[in-house]
Length: 202
Length: 202
DNA sequence: TAGATTGTTAATCGATTAACAATC
DNA sequence: TAGATTGTTAATCGATTAACAATC
Image (cartoon, rainbow over all chains, first blue to last red; front, top):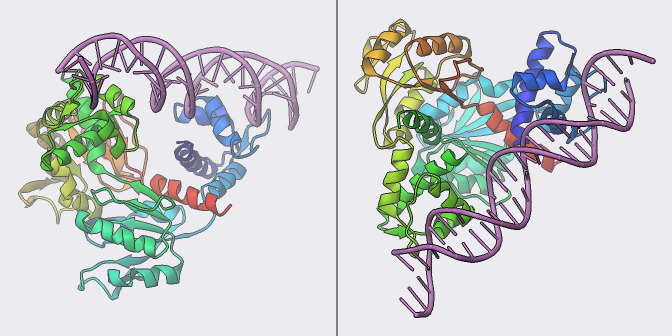
């Protein structure tokens, strides 16, 4: 929960830095996101004393601290599994690269797509997954395969030593407890919206 | 928060019904999702008395109730704005249709894509947005345009009477308070993952 | 010094869980 | 009736907010 907020703060600090703002108070930050200033201070203080009493937080310094905490002070090679519609969309999506996530290798089972490159990124058959993931020291994988294939892909990822999975397949996948899993489920997002619309007309 | 859980329960009930299970207890449901059975009962009781003491919940009946509460007892026409990589991926995504969401109209500004149909769904130029959205009584929109175009699209959607927006553009958009907004931000999802990986090695 | 703002403690609030009478 | 399970109240827990001494 706090981690999500750290991400949001970081993005805001990037913007402030661009705008040439040197310092920012917890009140300023809180206002931007409808949060309480005590909440902001507590979030930040949890990781260390980053502020200066009477002044606030130095934008550049705080940004660097938060990026370090979020692991954004380095580049993360990412494996993309599934290069269909969704996979290509994610691959071309600009948002990812900005914070240091770099798709380093792609896997797909369609022979027409494999053994070539997309913008310099090699595309392999899924059978090569373990070899290529290990060779590149990839720890994060994005799963964008059909639901039927998701669990099998997940098992192979675990066997290859992957430590975190962002899952777009519309199905539950089971992973060992020490592998982080994040599901992106479009239906759930839409259902929260339709709930409120339906409620309005009840 | 509860709404998300209702979605999850509903999906589980669909599965149970397929499997021929007639009744389910709060304990059964709780176990499946690492929740507390009191939590499940409270979530459900909030909307009415759906259970039977000594028995549990009738799967078919509870499913129908939850679908009604979530607004899934009807079809929702959805407008998709942006038919690039991401837009096409979403369009072909099987998950959406299953719960009654149907992409009824697509908008894009590339003349090569407009004034034709994709699987029977018409594609219009964005300038026709208000007209076509109103004609179809569409209340939900999925925004899959580049960040630069997102706010302008959002404004047009509001003007056309849209009541809920699922935003994939990697930027904040501002909407009137009575329009529901849900952001799907890939970077934030990845950052929560890299946070835990970085923490592990700290 | 006076004003501003932090970090942190104590108070509040809301959400989760335990417990149990009601009842199928 | 005995066993099971609900709906709900009371207890617990955790997260948010208010307040303020510390201090720039």
